[in-house]
Image (tube, rainbow, N blue to C red):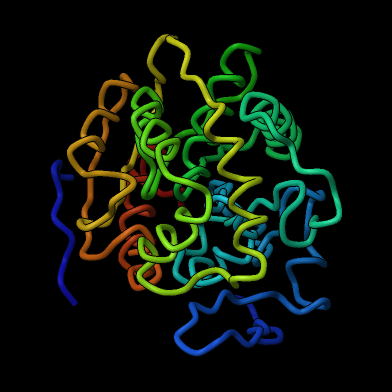
Length: 290
């Protein structure tokens, strides 16, 4: 399997995830069964831990793409080493929380997420990993934690996420496209048909409208390292823009690029997990004695 290019050096047992049938050529997203370990070990409505790892050194909060469920990160869980405890985040109005009102404002969603994470982490080391809009949400949650003087992550990982201070370039392009043209655009970027035609319009109208209203505000750079992952052929998170993530942190920023489009990660979970774990280890320092 080809290795990613780099701009900088450097499961438990239980039932298998249920996969809902999709039309031919559909991209299938695993959905946890109702009695799986995720629901049994969730620390709150926000998080759904794949596997409890009491001896873990760091908790990794994973934020899905626009409209995505926490189950998006199911393939990541078994790929991470035992000292990393993955906590996929279920946002209001998505996945298991579909009946709850969705939060329409990025700043408000980031505030609520940050306060929940601070309570949940309870002083333990933690990190964020977000795909697409999930990376933007993680970035804003970190800034909220800093403004409040709360706990800070050891690392921010972003995948297929345009840099927040360049987000206006993406929203400007989206505004030029009628909504009905956004559905095939997102399907094309995924490389497969990720959304049912019957629900795609509703999902995109709700989600895209949230991010169209996002406005970046100047603040001091973050002080944590950032790991940036992306697909070489991604038409949303362009690689020439991804390099500007280095302007948003005083910590080390690593870039890794893989073959593929916006959902390149579907075929690269093991490599991404390995690189993410390596960067987490670097941020945490040497492993604790057994």
